[in-house]
Length: 370
Image (cartoon, rainbow, N blue to C red; front, top):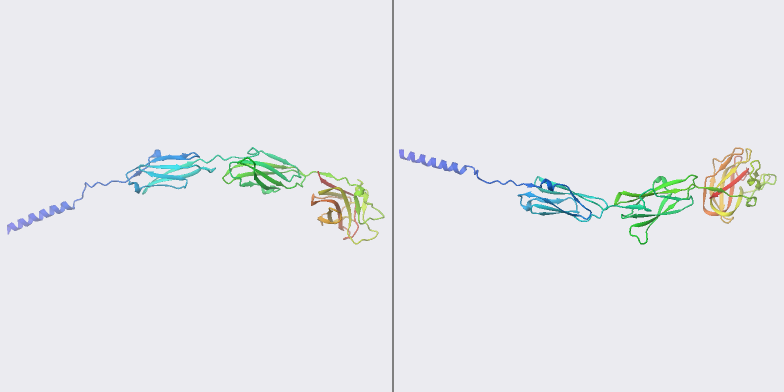
């Protein structure tokens, strides 16, 4: 019995020893830490010229080749992953602005970014050979003006301020024999003001908005000369036989006057007419009232004709006509929109009555553009 107990004890001890040995950890197992490093010298931003080029970024890693990545955030920026390195490349930059992108090299949370910049083409734009300080002077009558714009960019923006809308783009055409020049023609509205006006025109391209060229249109003020009016140029449909002959309108004296018919009546508005020696298309008129208080025009039609038969009303005055004794009135410039040789001053009403009725006037003048 004693021998069996001893034997069982030995067997238990043996099993316990080997069981503990089997459960012990394998401290000699080899764990390899995976890492990916792009050294600082490869993280310096890459700069390519316009023509493009290549740059190599070193990669220090024990990660399997297929498990790490190299990517670009721009279509123009190419990356090629190789063993222990990444080749970064770019082709020709045909744009007039620099290109910016970056390359990312990564494994898991380990990530490195390399910034890449590529220069753009040098933009150029000149108007009549200069960037600015180009002045083109035109008279008040000029209707067109042209400049030559030289640029290696597309000319697709011509800026004219809203405050100077008297200048309008008419056409853009190629310059014969040149690949980078355009002839730009503008329409310039007639200046009917008595002071000069200015417009700065700016040329620009959507390929590079910062590169511009400009010139200034300087348009002279309207200048007028008096049309010499003679008695034989004047007529009226309402002659008053008792006083105020029509020649008094052009005698240069403010103490004489023309008076239309009052001793009898007619069934049309009273007017006087001027037959010009040469056709004009625009004018200013001036008159002085008679030195009394009645018969002053307050509603007037200004009419013109090419042939003396067919008449067009080019201006109607219904307010702000002077009614004081010896008062004067000067019109704005009236653009008839046509050449004419005949002029009528038709009185529809006076400060005393509605027409047909008489009116009177001391002096009358007309002015044409110089």
